[in-house]
Image 1 (cartoon, rainbow, N blue to C red):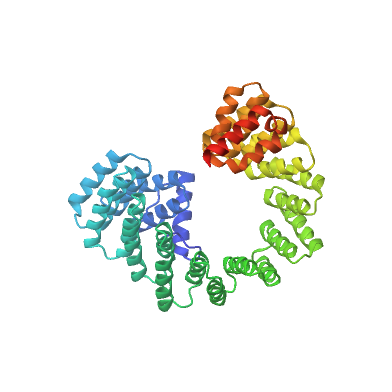
Image 2: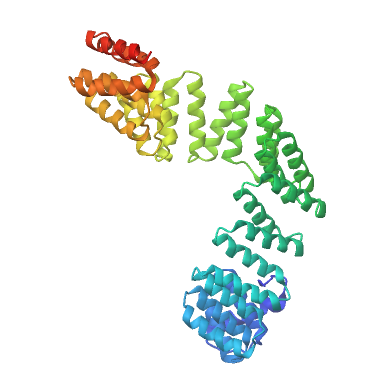
Length: 467
């Protein structure tokens, strides 16, 4: 138990201990005082001070099982499993029915990734435990390590049955349902839970999220309303409710919910951005831009704010301003493929072909390798007269999209232009085989090739044969 400022005796023990460390005077503490001091330091992450308290405690109380258990805990924390196991064995000889000994042994197994052994050892602890809830939770976590979500769910449910306000276990139960794609089952369980604990804002919030998964927006809205009724300071419920209202095209109501959320937790760049988006949807562009700008004033490193302003200007066909703001977003997150893709499209609209090509190349390097992106880059290279680079681009694309007539027609046209007729006919034949109706690609991109007598005859002969 963490020391409480209101507990004068515990505060006194802590001050007395720290004074002893500073002066090198030795004061006497009973073993329970040492236990509280050690627990306090472990809770706040001061392991070195906890170790000092354990050593001094064992000097004064060498037979204390609990103090020696703290030493075991430290040894496990430091991955000194052999020493921890040796000390545990000696303690088992003294107290073979001490559940904490089984728990610590199971913790050793867990840290050694021996999760099956950990589970069996925790089950031994269950047989003698006074408080089974903690042990069921630990078993549940071990099953999660093994990706055994059904078994984990069972043990977390036992925790909730023992303590209906065990919200940590409730979250873990919902996590298991989500991992198993059991949305309907999650809804059923949460409704059961709310019958037992009807004013639990956490459960209502989670129920709303599950209804969203099922696209039941009105039920989700009702659940978030009940979450707010249960706790009118629950910011997450206001935000989720606002998102649902957006999807229902009730943007003015959504703005109201976002405003309430800001009144509770303070202004955030994200909430300002969402309000701006809502205003844009109801065609209040001045207010939309005002809130978008407020979002980046609130947090200049909020890349989504810069991106949203770029999108705003793009829809208004103000491509120069759009380019300015997307550059700001890229400066903040240069590894975002979507930003580079949008950067390329803006530059393409401005006819800045070299920059557009650079953007598409970067987009592909970052893993956004859709067929559209490959084609966009290759077509720009064609416009720039970079035939070899365009061909290489399309050949690379073909490795990821091997049955694309769009790529095959383009490669065929380039090969003919590069005076590689044999390869050109091979790709043209493949393209026609995939989809002969899309021959207009060759006609539009390479009209001088399409009208060549030999190529035209080849296409007609293919169509005649295939009919």
